Image 1 (spheres, rainbow, N blue to C red):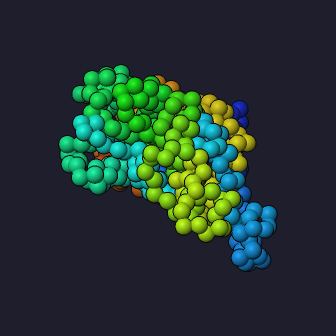
Image 2: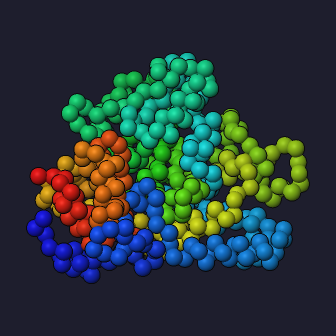
Image 3: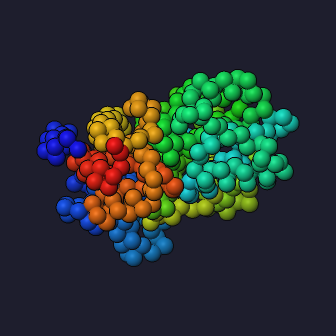
Length: 418
């Protein structure tokens, strides 16, 4: 590889991220003490502030007992409300449209209870053929719940022959041609396998014009690319917080429901104690009085110790801003793409930086074996998707140009490319 290590270090001096804010794992092998961690699209790294913030919540429990629901620095009863506005800013939503709760697939199921309403010939669900398996399982089970056949009802979108990515114009044309049969469009904003960023506003508009409900799985998009869910007219969306949002393994997810659906009496919705108006919650009434907000989709009281890391993460995103992160992300992936081209690594992620997130996927012979050797021999942490894809995610908050250089050099040393 011709590009010198010093160039990556100079780039880091000129364009630093916020690596000191995060714990970086030690390297298992190689010449450097810290890992080149490029797996944040699978599990983000912990902010240094998280431990103290989490322990403060534990201390409140120890000092206040049950009174912690109503008193203290961060009372538990309204705790989730602290997350609402920063989560809304992150995805381009109104606060009333946003709630942090549950995990991603649980939230998708709760949303499909309301928004997948098959009737007559309008019963199909559109997903991408490379959707994350959990989404495939979820939509198939929802279809079966309605007494329909998943093989006939779930339409899986595939790229054109010989191509690796979906084309917006093909999705739009399909919706124009067959839209009267589509009840729900449910796609991933950024594809987990290839890193492709779909055209959310164009597809949302086409789906709604066809009479379908349009929802988005933003697991790989939230905290990765700028979003304007309210302005784009998205019906609903859900995301997790343990990838680019760095809130810890299995962290709570988020939900968006467009303002036009809030307060509707004709939408079926599962309910529990937390679905009712908080002002009347302790009246213990037998009938719920749901607010005209996304909060109405909550069911149970939130797990406080799981909410603290999300709050800490959202504070970081508010401080740095998605525009700055996206700009640095494009620079990092552009540098890594140039390095991969130099060594001849076959990249399957879109070449246009505007059509991808903070991820470059490379096709290799044995992704599982290769990522193990990257980690144990070179201290580079990447993510394998068997049989033949390695995903490299230079996360703009904490990844460096030097991380990218180390990854490309390691791939070349292990025989990837020309």
